[in-house]
Image (cartoon, rainbow over the protein chains, first blue to last red):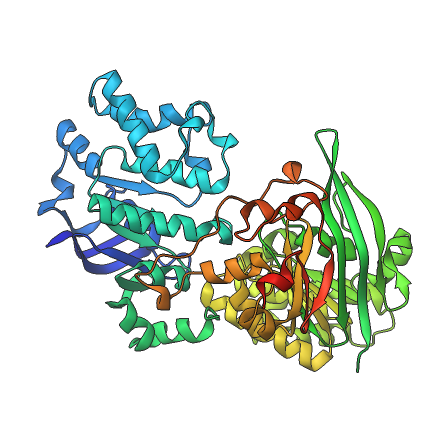
Length: 251
Length: 324
């Protein structure tokens, strides 16, 4: 079943066409990859899916509903409970004056979930899940290492039990010896919690490892969508071929 | 053929952070021969960039050289004063940085910036502008007239990096230090920049010290590689040797943990723990010991020496034991 569907989505900023007639579907339980150069429109797609940009053409459908029509406060809250994002550098998106424990709890407070004691349990439970030791609860984000900070960002994204998570370059800023741990965690969480991911990255090795299906973006257009193994073995589009040939990614 | 261009000998450097003096480069030995492309690989904070900056004496103010030599041909660069250094920097040894935008002057046309570099070192050049046009062409900027008269912000990231390469090579240096020159660029552009470095290395016989965290890039470009971890060189050897048959537990674990399409569906063998922060590094022990799957008591109490094994050098107490 498809969880997300984009139908002929275009988006322009001033006179620049950022996205040009984009259509794809993401199935439930899938990790869908987006690759492309900077400026190709990867992150714009992420922002559109999160309803953070207005005035696009075409339709974006989440669970059979057109997200442009979600307007009432309660419906919006329900939508954001189900759709979350993890950014490249969590440090710049985390409130530096709040503790780790509070940052994870905050979405629960906003969404008026549970009583205080139940919230605490939920925070403990999610910290366990993402491999963040509970001793960090009273620490501040700057006191964590890059890898732990990314685990914190994942915990915040998952605490409301969403169905769909956008991962925008979420391992690019990490040291290479830390990357593998986060990638394993994402795979584990996906299986355990029945998640669907949109995975945005420019790193062919990472995308090739984690994604089931990959869309290649060039200048705001999708030039090719294929299952991962096929895309690596038999790229069809000339841009995709160029991308594989020109980047030395194989060890 | 074994013509030494650069030799770093027992080089150590400390940084003053919060009134404490912390070793950021520890006993580094490195050699580059004429025309060779040598890689220095490591994660952020391992000291690779500090080592590179040391060669050109571009160190931050809070750094202090503890001991060692950096010999360019027969001269110890560390003993030179500024005037002497300026005769070598930009002429015999040049550098390109990760972010080409911040390395170029935004107010001067890029052609004139390259011209400045040329004129500073070859005053009797008859046709300097022609030389600049020709080098721009050689680094793949075909429309050399337009590029010459452009300001940095009018060029794309890849073009800016080419301009920097042109500027670094205009005086035909013997050594080019390239500090993560492709990290800020798009994947499709990365490959092109590597190709140009390779071509220019062949054409001018310029040796290159390529600093990177990406082993796949290093593999396509370099002959020899030095792997750094937490201020120290832990392993060095030919690139094939290190990828096929890594000796140090860090290199082994790192190579195994890299994701790729062939690993799909499998759990990646990740390395536990984190790279120790500068201020948490313990002297007189192996820096990798807390994360190492083979670690024994000796690893925590004694700093291993860099020793020859097979065709490589490795800094590990247990190298013989685990590599049988």
